Length: 153
Image (cartoon, rainbow, N blue to C red; front, side):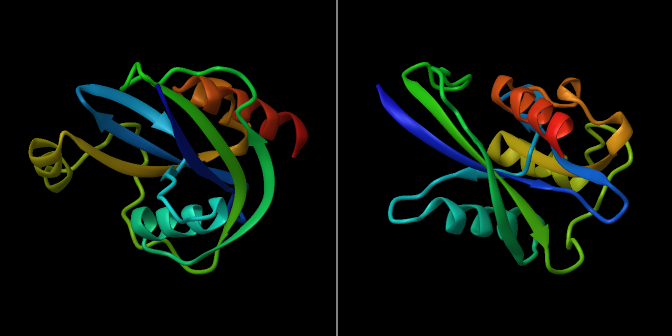
């Protein structure tokens, strides 16, 4: 048994849209918030800045803490891992450097080539605030956070 610590950012733009990642991982399709795994020696805010830079190609400012998992959540990919997820608001300091899609799971040829080589790929899209809800995302902890964000902000 080990802990898998994940850090995610909630980005809301000037148009009141929420950024989500559509991912194809190990044969499954998931809509989630951008972010990823904490590396040894990193703080959680540094992790999120790095992940958002890697995924979106941008510099960000990490804002207020939203939520940290406070219940047992087994990993969907590694049954011996317990997931601990930490969520922050994040503000983009520059324009996104990645293509933004209009439709869910709209992967292009280059992204599908990445999937063939690595077993995973992702794309990003903005969801209008009035269409954003816990049903927008796939993973259980993300659903809880989407509900918190929608009800409180």
